[in-house]
Image (cartoon, rainbow, N blue to C red; front, top):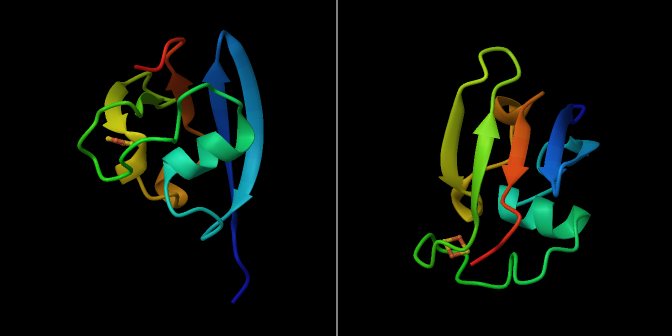
Length: 92
Ligand code: FES
């Protein structure tokens, strides 16, 4: 079975970073972000949904609906296809 590619956009400090990843390439959205962007403090925390330092927003380009999520708890799969991931300027 061929692995499908998932296109998505990471938005950080006002810049869009359009990427394509292979399904199953990353354990979580947090590890994907940490691998693509050098964000001080991001991805160095609990990884278990308890510290809250990995909050990002997932924005649908179709409906503009935004939802806050803990990136460490989001699996990278087709549900993220074409989504925009807004990463806050300041990681707490
Ligand atoms: S890294 Fe702690 S909640 Fe995600």
